[in-house]
Length: 391
Image 1 (tube, rainbow, N blue to C red):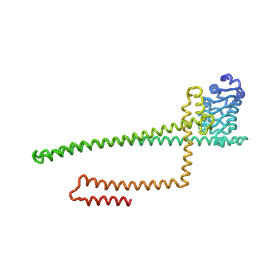
Image 2: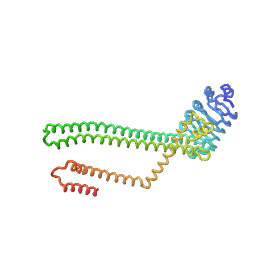
Image 3: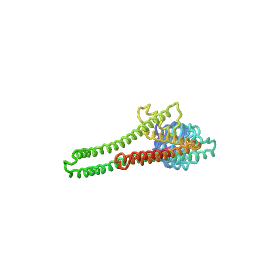
Image 4: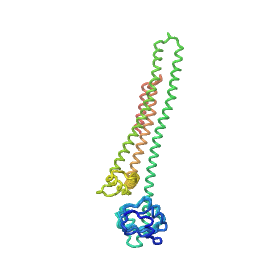
């Protein structure tokens, strides 16, 4: 049936009530209704309506809405903008879940959602609505339930944003550290060149006939030392770049695996045989079936996919909290923390000991004093091994 015009609506308008029931309607005339602000009570019961257009959410003057006995699959995402809505009848439709904005309907006082394939938690909040009192209680419970659900999803999104910021900060710090090492290496190279020049200058004043062979060896060794400092700094920088590149590759591979796994779970969730266990996935499943049948993506495909991913992360976050609570009850987290602290402490102590005695051994090997003997070297190594054993 074609969409009703403004003239048709005015013909059936009775005071503030607009009765459009049992007319085989499949389209809600939202644009024409916007021009009738006097119509605050709308009755669309017993029709063939499948979806509510987004423009319908702009009709904030509505206080009573009857959509019972239709084929509505889901409500618009901005349904919560109907702030003056007090009475809502959704009896006998095909609704599985409600939009998160439903929690903004603070004026809602009466709600009937019987005869809908609601998800378990939502069905528990909606109740049976057998009489007037139960329908009023259902309105309060469902609005509170959707408000808490929206707040939980908002917290999950905020945590994800914080993790992304921390990851970006780590990458920025690593890049800054690489830049600092480059700046520190440059002055060291210049200092080494000045030292070599100062070492060569006194030898030039010595006569050529005195210590001729020895002087030739020293002048040959000096350029070799300056040449060896360059590869060491370059190798250090190359190691840093290799580690950063490996970190990027690991993050990229994990991200691709996460996207592939999430896609598989979402598409499996939208098959006809499986149950839609992911909250807020019904709109995306509808868009997916439309895309497969018409071979073109609907305009709401990306938005509904993002909402489905957010809902799936909300489900996983709840499961992780349950796992954490189980681990805390068993005391496994405390044990793991104790052993981690113990291993970390032993590692740090060992590193300090090795660094101290290692530097002494290097000094003895490179420039051993005339009074140092092999016994003193042996004593240093004995002390190092003794402290390692005590650690």
